[in-house]
Amino acid sequence: MQITVDPKLKALIPPLSQDEYDKLEENLIADGCRDPLVVWDGLLIDGHNRYEICQKHNIRFDTKDMMFKNHDEAKEWMLWNQLGRRNLTDYDRTVLALELEEIVKARAKENLVQSGKQYGKGSQKSENPIKPVDTMKEVAKVAGVSHDTVAKVKKIEEKATPEVKKALSEGKISINKAHQQVTGKVKKAKPLPEAPEYSKEEFERDQMMQSIEALQEENSELKARLAVEAMDASEEEKTATAEIIADLKAEIKTLKAENSALKSNRDSYQNENTQLKKQIKYLERELKKVK
Image (cartoon, rainbow, N blue to C red; front, side, top):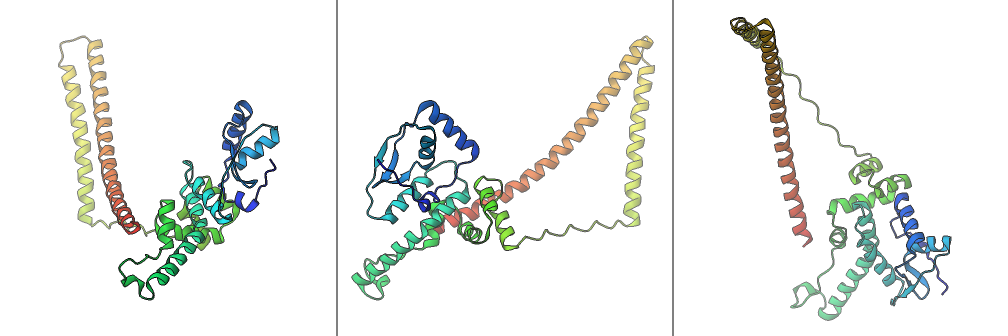
C-alpha cells in the first residue's frame, strides 16, 4: 500500500523527546512493529514515528483502515487519540484541545442553527432547546485545565518562539512562566517588610537575656566539674565522666536546635497546607463551572 503523510496532520502530534524516540527505535529494531499503522484511504492517521523508523530500517509493518466522512473527522479522531496519551504535559493537552476548538465552534454553530430551525427565535424559552456550546469550557474540559490556563496557552501559541514551546512540551518551563515571558507581565515581588526598630529598652533587655543564658551555661559547666571532682574515682574515670557529660550537653544542644528547626518546618508546612486548601477550593469551583 502506498502511504501518504500529510504534514499538517503530522504537526498535530506532540513530538517525542529524543530519549523517547531512541527507545521507540530500539524497540522496533528488536521486536518489530507489532501495532498496525492507522490509515484512511492511504493517508497516515496514526503511527507517524513508527512509520518513519520502519522506513529507515526497512522494518515490516501492518496497516489498519479507518473510515471517516471527511478530513475534519479524521483530524478530530487523531486529536482525541493523542489526548489519550499519558505522558502529555498540560501545555500539550491544551494545544491539542485548542486544535479541537474549531470543530467545537462548528458544532456550536450547528446546534444554534438546528435550535433556530426547530424552535425559531427565543429557542431558549422552548420546551426542548438545544443548548449553545461554550467553546472555552469545552476546551478546558477536554484538556483537564482551567479556563485561565487555556487563555494563557492561546497567547503563548500566538507569540512564543519555537524554543519556548519546545521547553513547555518537555516540561522544562511552566505555562505561567512562559506566559509572563511572552506578555511581559511579570508579577512584582512583594516588598520585604522593614526590619523592626528596637527601642533602647528592648535592646537592653535582649542583651540582658543573652548574658543570663551565658551565665546559665557557665553555671551548668561549673556544676558538672564540681560533681566530677567530688567523685570517689580515679583521674581516668573522672576524665571519662567529664567527656560523657560534655558529649551529652552537646547532644542536648543539637536536639534543641533540631527541635526548633522542626517547629519552623511545621509552621511552614501548615502555611503551605492552608495555601493548598485554598487552591483546591478554587479548582473545585472551576470544576463546578465546567460541569
